[in-house]
Length: 402
Image (cartoon, rainbow, N blue to C red):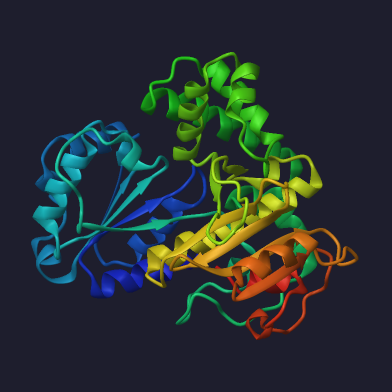
């Protein structure tokens, strides 16, 4: 399937000189997207840091990389160069700065990373102004029904079959297991992916020696998705300090194993202001059905917000609401630091609209206030037409995002 990111990158290179940085978890499809864009160019070249021959070219000189391209290609048609997994090179930033400065406007450059480069900076000059970032997320409901972005962050609803959503919930949104939809393959793929992340990527880049304990932490938080992070409790279970747990959670976030969202406190009386909630980047590994569904929605919101911000639609944020009386609402999406959509997630439409949702809406007056029900069938109705708190089909709402 064609990912929505492909057309966006092609449009970018049609009018901009900046390098594209594709950031996202292992196996999310970054390389496939980059290669699909690359192959549309008349002249192109793909280099992977993990390949010894490619690594020699990268370590040689900047002009070596473009050496086998015809001179008229560089002068006239802007060849496409893909640098895959370059973050594993200890001097990646100085290399990219020099390469971009030499070939800006003459090459279309795509760089991929499966760890957040800003976490592992090792000195050197800034890349400010030299690249645009696109964070690549797993396949979502909206991406199954549309492959291009129109003129605004929110699109009109588009019908999706229930079986597709159920498959997405079961197999996750990573392209290979989702497209195969075969349980044995899924299990083998998951085991290999986790081993590569923990025992190769994190070991080599984050320089963590206690990999067995880190693996214990990664397994524990699978059962705490959607819950408040309790660093002290986790420290006791893993037998390390609170500070070590905080550092390891940051590492797991930087390798796209999980992400955290913080509580919103503006205009909330007795609000919780410290502990974040944690979600996994792959909802399919969560066993509890209710926690998996909430995480599924969290990933959709995270994907949409990252894309809206990366694409320039605005300045969006993702939060949750909780006060000291333990009243809580699952999600708040903000637009330019103002409440935009207050969202509660439920499995069934038979559940009455949440009193907590109504309570917090009275305080923050978000533009939209919805309780999303998983079992409500799709309706051809734009949620932007709703002006008061309502129970609404989850499939319809998610189809309008990214």
